[in-house]
Image 1 (cartoon, rainbow, N blue to C red):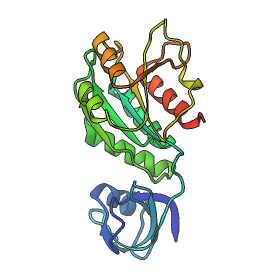
Image 2: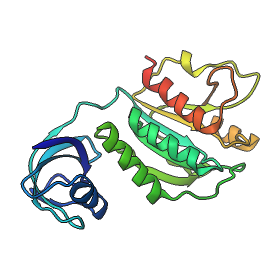
Image 3: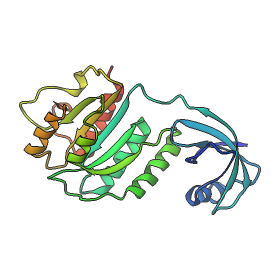
Image 4: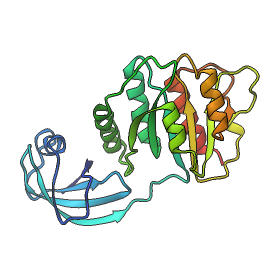
Amino acid sequence: MIFNQYFYCPDLTNPVATLSVEESEHCCRALRHHAGDEILLTDGKGTVGTAKIMVDSHKACMIEITETHEAHDKGVRRLHLAIAPTKNIDRIEWLVEKCVEIGIESISFILCENSERPRVNLERMQRIAISALKQCQTSWLPPMEFVPFKEFLEKHSDTDADKYMAWCDDENTRQLSQETFQHQDVILLIGPEGDFSPAEIELARANGYQEVKLGNRRLRTETAGLYGCLLMATTN
């Protein structure tokens, strides 16, 4: 019997695989699956599949992959959110969960001059993302990184994408909601609670980022990130 629950297995290319300790625990102890049961899998890279449990160990559940196919839940754009993590880590963890649910392609946590959080536990963020992936039954797990702001700009200087920087400037009237995207790839920069520094703004401009507003209200960092991603995902 196949239950309506995804399990995460990063490699679906081999006929036999062993689930991670976390997934084995969830599958065999929490949900009480046994040998012979069929389960649903995703690799987080756009492939889903069916497998039969061979060994129902809650530490190393061994499965036989019987079928795989490409999922059809990929968005029309590849959305890359680059955001300065908030001082309250709960807020950024909430954002990661929501970004997975709506299909964000990549997430970069950027270290800015005004950042109040100098590091991020990427392993914990990965666990939160996997949990969201399974909960909403999507097949795409966004890669995540923590990188200095300047290094991020340099890394994507040659990326053929629409590039935007959300900036709280009263003279800026350009709204992201009114943009017509020209590329499949879109990058959005969201600064820390203290906003981008003047030097960072000039550096982003020099790297081809357009300054935009996310409505006419001042939003919390994590709210701005989610709202910007929703706009990019739903605007033609």
